[in-house]
Every structure is written in C-alpha cells, then in structure tokens.
Length: 123
Image (cartoon, rainbow, N blue to C red; front, side, top):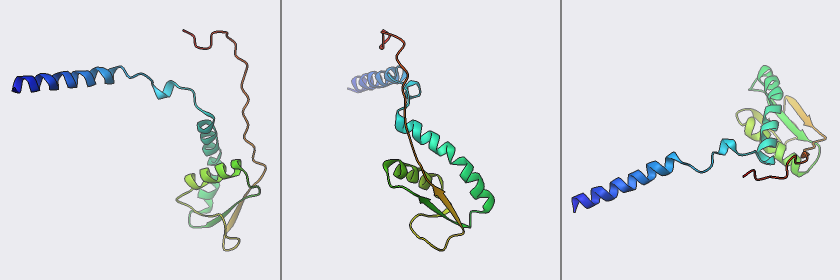
C-alpha cells in the first residue's frame, strides 16, 4: 500500500516538473495589445509631471482638470490616479488647491503597417 502511494506521488511530481519545464507560451514573447501600449506610453509620459510635482512638493494640493469627456480622457484620468496615488491630487473640487494641471486635446490612435508576407503564421 505504501509503495503504491509513493509510486503515485512520484508520477504526480514527475508530471508537474515536466509540465513546468515546457510551458506553452511565454508572455514576454507575445506582442502587446493596444491597451498595454497606451498604458505604458501614458505612464512614461506622466514622468515629466511627476518630476515637476516632486520639485513643488508632495504636500501641495494639485487640481487635475481634463477639458473633454471621452473614453481617452477617462483612460488618462485613471492612469493619473494610479501613478499619483501618493500625491494630493483632486479632480472634482474647484477651489482649495495650490496648483492646477490642465489637459486638453487628448488623442490616442493606432496605425498598422502592411503585412510584408503571405505566410502570416510562419509555420
């Protein structure tokens, strides 16, 4: 009885070691989707604002206003909230702030190049 349990456990662990060694997809090798690309570009673009806010001081209150209501504006606002969660940023209140950050004319767009091959799958 004990030998059969040990045998079953040995097969079980061998299977998982083999399965882990040969994972099917590495996420790093997959192309990024538009959401991931826009998030990365937006967060990197906010570094300049972060530098200015850091120099001015974390204790100050900053009013963020986006002139338009759109999906792009909501996306940008969510990224700002994520990146500056440790700062004193306000979004709705119209008074009681030290500095204003105004954003307008937001446009996200993509353009894809033409495929240069007939064999898209490359088997």
